[in-house]
Length: 452
Ligand code: GLY
Image (cartoon, rainbow, N blue to C red; front, side, top):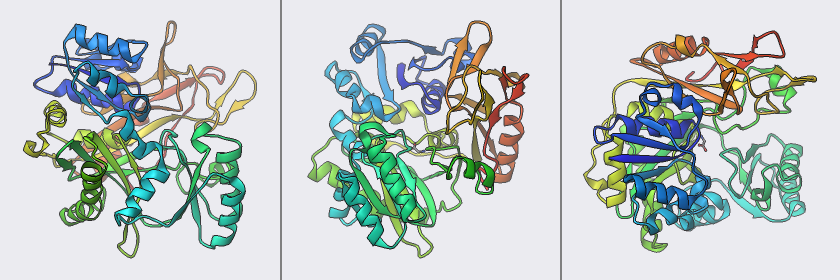
């Protein structure tokens, strides 16, 4: 079979690798992908091939002309723009929800009301379209809040606030300065929760649900908690959407998995199938919190895999991804058996750090970051370590260079969490982003506490 993965980030590269591992798959097209893929073994062999296609009709034409048997769409934007609908109209099998169903992620207020309506636990929240009213609310509420852009923001649209000035500032940033564009026309102000964050995933086939019996821990803040100087410079520990990840999460247990399924996944899926009447086929991502009093709460629902959560879960999952994908399309998930290996996995993300600009300095991700830094050290990465590429580009003179803030993932596995951490850090230290304006100094940065 031939599979097409649509996307260009680390999660999409990882999806392409997993389909490439399937015994049923002879070719994976990655649209548009990124040039990092071409330096990997599957890229070099042509098992994964990058295809630049301009629009969704071209993707559909390509699938028909090349006999593509399954398309998996990794990220929320093409889903929201209706890629699945276009492909399904042409009879092409897909993994991913239709445009209408993306509302679960692109309209927080809708999903919060849905969850509240069916009694799924979630923090107290209020929705505002007027920044003045939102500020009045946070001045009166007393407890700490988080302020969230209502629409899509690449997993970054949440500002965690310590006090009222923080919350007012967050409302200004999202609703007035529009740092997330029109996604900030509305905000959700939500009670701040403490505890352990859990990223939980389920596959849906329009009829059945297959919750993954394994979950991961994402590290969203840009800096390690003790990196006081950097946090001060950036005016807070900004939410990046993910700087690293590990699995199994320290809280994974059969009874907690069962509890999450019973309290959260099943009522939500029941609402989706039986009350909304949606034939949702794809992944649901539940962003959860378990507080010190053992209460579970839903922070958010997304309509796709997590990034970087998928990069570790995929390594631990031994079930053939093509068989899972076809089961999503054919409505046969009830017949799929989940198999997880017994390793721990740690994903550390190499980010653009402080670098010299033609004039002055770039602060580095998640602030302004430099681009075009030559990536060195990839040949020294040890066997068995996975590298998934995200923000990279190809330069005619320099070869592979940095292009985004989160550049690549180094994922290591071991029989212990400490062993996986040690391998991931030993290998990421081999990576150099050569700062050409600063005598070739290394401007790669990563968090040091992933998996701790
Ligand atoms: N890891 C956060 C996200 O994928 O949205």
